[in-house]
Length: 246
Image (cartoon, rainbow, N blue to C red; front, side):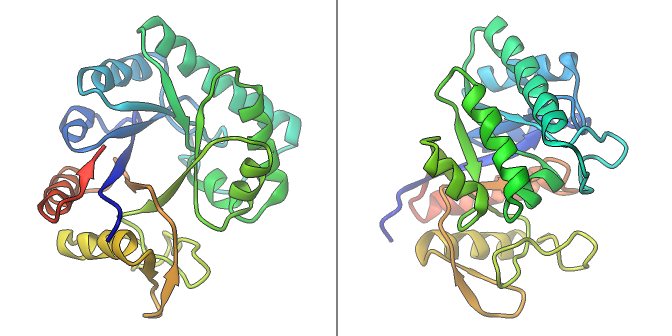
């Protein structure tokens, strides 16, 4: 095993209110900025917490769909989607700057993230938003995705992301949340899942096969029922085998 450090990220500012419990165990966070959840008050509160814990700050833009928490695909004109995403990120950037902090990355949320894996139109719109940001902000992307390819073609720095609390299909897409086995709930199973991706650069899919994957940051969803316990044990188990969380 060559990798000695990884990033652990968590989705926050989504109305759960558990951010102060999760921050001690992660190294970066993705802050909902009004698309699926969040407002100026929640954004500012989470930015302040991230500063206290020295956590890298990221924007977590979404389809503008609070009703469905951004987890259902939307058919939007590219211009409308661009405008919404740019506004969401800009709103967070304003607060980050007011708090004398830095925006480290952007990570799309929910259906937007999943669609950008294969949908060139969606991925291109996100890339155009990234190009419009006047800062060297990284983009969290899944391995072997359309958005990864487009980002690299446009010289946008990427960080490869995998999900600690989600199961994978053979094509590296996430198992749908409508399926019973979409989420990983057991801390030992989660550590095994993540460690395999770090050590072997492979993920065990729901069919039992191993697929090649590249990951530098691992996500645990902040709205997971046992998010605090899972994050605490994941960090402890990784550090026990000599992997630092940075």
